[in-house]
Length: 505
Ligand code: 6LW
Image (spheres, rainbow, N blue to C red):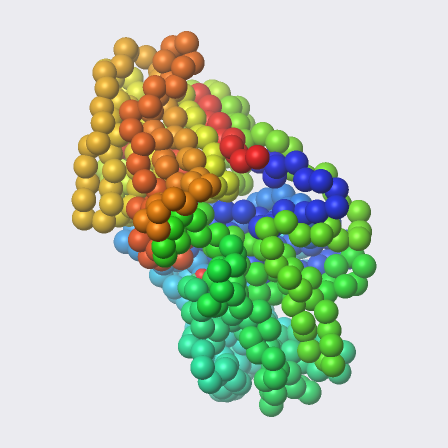
């Protein structure tokens, strides 16, 4: 299930390079190949991992934590709990990923020889007491783990043991809160400590310090933050949480998270924090970050063709493709393509989308305007199609035999907003998101979410259109972004296919 970017003229590239809910990017290079991993919070499988050869076009090749033995998300795990902020590195012929499970067990480390998997079972790091862990190796093989705070401790990455007490390295800039997301690099004569600070909202930024050893002391860059859009009306906001990489031509680049708020005031972002790419220069031993924009000059090296333009899944394969995510857990007992071949069967497990334990299979909304459709057979139960930010914020269309109905859950309000009788048999459900392009009034929302069904002749019958602001991070809070997907709320439901298409252009 791959989705293309819109066609790009050859001399420009589109940012974000990985759109939709893909925050906290961490990147590494292994020869001509680049790999990038992101946070995944309450989603199972966790930590989506991507491959590219040009830093611009990325293909998801798997999920790092795709077995219950690697990822425990207890049933009560809140939305925006779970998996935070990985660091992905290639060292000594292996790939290493260190990450925090804030809901079960804290920091863990997994390794792989092939980043598409399988990844090892985790080594826990009980002595590392902070989020956003980074790993870096000294020339003598010493492994340093640096985490939010910013603190550092030596570790044995094979056992997870800490070696010696943690030390405070740097508290970031005096005028910024939350020094976090550290990454440590040996570049030229210096060790550089890159951090995010200011909080992951509008004040987010990237700052850097340097020292002669991996343990410091560190001298802050006189031009910190080296990147921030705080206080600007730039269309990309909340920029921060970055990682550095060298391109095929050895120039330097940064991947980072940012958001694209839409509508009037205060601006609502609905796709979560997305992964952007920006060039970096080095001047007097400090990084100088280039202009970040949604359309940027293409880099000088050859670009690979973008991913195949199909967001359709006919559920013909035994396993679900890697972009499909569930919430907290997924088992073949509740979710299978084997029961009715060519269909995805979901068995309800008691909860609804208002609960933390629901049978759900979805994909990230990756475009500001898009259409999702699915053919559901509700003969044996109730289920449907939903666009979801968390348990308290989702719009759903649910089919049962004889009726479809649309429910809007917005905080404490949970209301059926439309319903309609339908003939017995399968029905196509549709959710269509249209971004607002012209803001006539400061109170205009970011998008409209149209929800309906398709008549037997294929015509769209809208049941309702809802303001998308209630499914935005500015309203709901948290760290995630919209996910669109299929759910079962009672009995068993079967989905013949699911289609997702961008509507931008
Ligand atoms: C993450 C922190 C952050 O751990 O948000 O933007 C937190 N940065 O570094 C959750 O993604």
